[in-house]
Length: 435
RNA sequence: GCCCGGGUGGUGUAGCGGCCUAUCAUUGAGCCCUGUCGAGGCUCGGACUCGGGUUCAAAUCCCGACCUGGGCGCCA
Image (cartoon, rainbow, N blue to C red):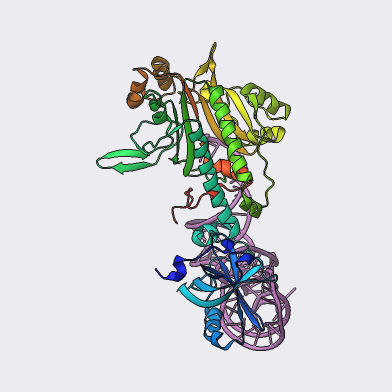
């Protein structure tokens, strides 16, 4: 590897204080400006842009000037030169080049504008995602996504959670509800997992009493909306010897912690957001109260019906901040949700709602083998298919609770992004399978 | 799955039966001016998704296909 690249610095690592230093930088040709006595080459890297300034009329620089004029925008270059403190330069410094290597020349014309002068539709951007990621806004979204995931891992680690990885290839048995992608598994049929639910619960019988997983989930639903993906990332936790109240607390603390780590991030400024850490505890309303609020707003929901999109929006408009809906009818919750003491029709289940969409759902789990088996059958599923799961409940299963949270939904709601595809590098939706 | 929109140079758009030899911005090629920072001025290049139909005349109206945006359903 040549020395130019080996010793390169990021644009933001150089300051006016480095006046006189010899440095090298490498990156993409962001812009070129050919003026009378001077030629500017703006080089962009991950961290920022650096202005390379070539003063014309210096004889030995003619060859370099010619190559700088010719190099197409978005080509990858490495430049070595001397730092000069300069008030007229954007970052207070500029680089007087001595040497330039064109590492990769970009074809013209470009599929997208990387300077932000002309917009592009999401579909066009996704087709050329590699280049879309060179734009400031898109880049920041994914740096923030990375911070969010790190914050989550730090959070769980501090609280004694064990990170787990469960299989994404599963046999026919599922928790029902959503459609699955079938795949060919040697001579048998298998599926891509819709959720780690059954596996994380089975671990509760293992003594691993606080686990979390951050992993892809797959849904074969033919939905085509701004908040659904066919491949999404789910944060799942499961905790033994606790109640649903405890995991709700963990959830709101996690959300607040993640927000605090994003609010801290200087790059957030590039997204023009006014982000605040949500106040704890989040508001909690019961399903019954939700229905009542909706009725007051002129939206009638029969008891036992799920809340549709318009109901979610109406409630969100009334409440205006993150909130929980608790005490759901068991009929619209999965078989593993535990009924409340003294009422078999209502479950200790909850959803975490953002005013625009659902972020997470969880519950106290059924840990009685008999009740679980009965629930599976009453949902019209075959207990035989769940034998591998049910077995874990026969030989010592502690009470437990947990939840699943959509990473993309958290991100889009936090960053006020309208389309969920914006927060996935290479989204998979009803139509898109490439790139 | 249902219901509405939309497909015009590389990108983003205007035009919505004849004034279209199709607007504007940006990009590309080039010239002028110029320590620029969305630099400025000028010249040139570059497009009506495809297939049928209606009409004297279609980018414009109709039908179909394909692509695409949104709302709802399902779902998280």
